[in-house]
Length: 564
Image 1 (cartoon, helix red, strand yellow):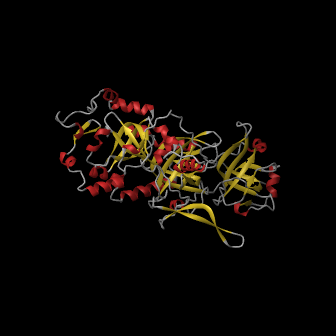
Image 2: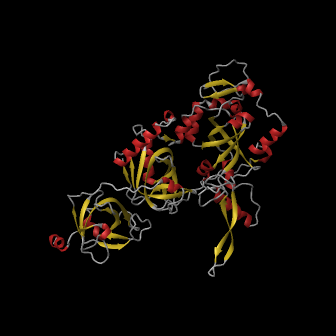
Image 3: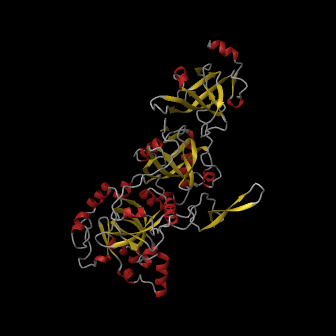
């Protein structure tokens, strides 16, 4: 039967030559990707097998095999298998993601014949990489299927997500860089995220990590363009020796080695676990000693949030892409008769002519809080990324809730009610002490990272003997700080950093005050020096954190393909 079918076929056709006039042809292809679609009623039974075929010219087309035909072809349909397929059929491609430029796909049906191909002469892989600058500058539409690669500059922490269908998932945010220095956000989901996170924390991994995603996507995440895995048919290459990765890594290392700052480049930076960031940070300090710091640095503090300040806006009025100011403009719409009407809705437009951002909103978080430990109280500012991780809501979403309250006729609080869930909670913060804080004695610091994980807090308390210190009524330096200075040194002139105590310069302490009342007034206006009367310390019963409701695209990753 198979021999007779082969005789009827004149020759092997290339994928570009296929049309719907006839099924009487053969194709020689390699399966470069595949994914299982399960039955809705029975998640253990396959409904359809989705694939991507590549011919010897490197041309690709989507393909599928329905469950009734799987028994006939299952021994042949394996990833990377090369096949000679006789009498396939073309079907309409109705999938959401178009992995090729064609609107049709190969379908294996009753009269199709398949056998293994032993004389494959085509490529092993065929990548069509996009320019990351085109992604960031919005020159490629969101959800477009692409191939992307880059050096992993930084990898952040693995996060839990909740999807619209109620299922749980994982998300990993990274930032990659290409050979031209263009940086681009990366979002990986579910098994892709888990495997990448594990690799980045592997002590045997490459110093300079290069990642490659075959059949990835252009992604829009929290208003910023980036790249992501495309779920169903994506393949992620991590730490493999394929030519494209090896060549990229070699050229990247050569580029940074030629730069003047190459000695400072220590390879892919992993902020992969909150535990590492906090437990390995030696610069711990009591809040009461922050004013003694004489050089810019990041320090670790522990304290309880006692109030949300109400004399400052809790969001930043600027473009979410470039931080420039924004303007509200009425939207115009064209009528059938070519006339224009002004819609009642307003849109935000960035005033920066060079900003190419889209979906602009002017409300990243800038939450002013008061934090207290056994030595003092300080003003800190919780910015967008860390605030979102804690609250599980964007500032844009919370402002919409505030607007609903106003529209209902009620008088809203000066900030969203969910902020009250922060009051009374103990956190560890990594804060930025900047030149302005030091020069003008401004005790208002930005937060770069925050956690209230019980295990991390307990480990930090044990490491710095904080429990013993807090049980004392004095403000003595914790036991972990060796008192290498004279015993009559003023306590507020002492800086506790890890196991060291450094006396602050008395000259510096004595000469920090601004030279005039006008300067003092300007400092207060610019830096929002806290007024205790402008803070809310109302404590409410702690609520459960809001569940995150994100649409990660496809709810489950059926066959994750990660090459390592």
